[in-house]
Length: 51
Image (tube, rainbow, N blue to C red; front, side, top):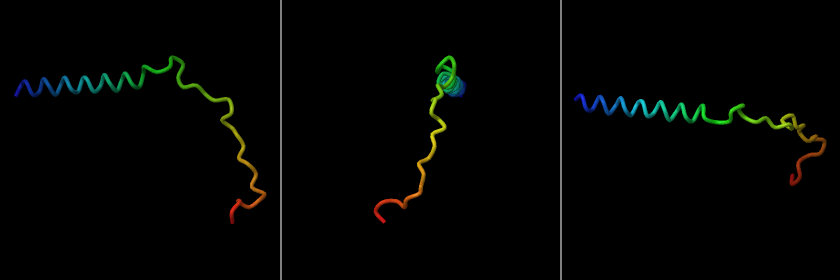
């Protein structure tokens, strides 16, 4: 019984370490932002082709 609890504790610690590593080991300044995030949608003066 004690061995099963020890194994479960080890698996839980491993899970927490994997989640922590994937969340916080990325870029040091966070995600890079694109300069052209505010692209304008094309004007819809003409109906779509094919109809």
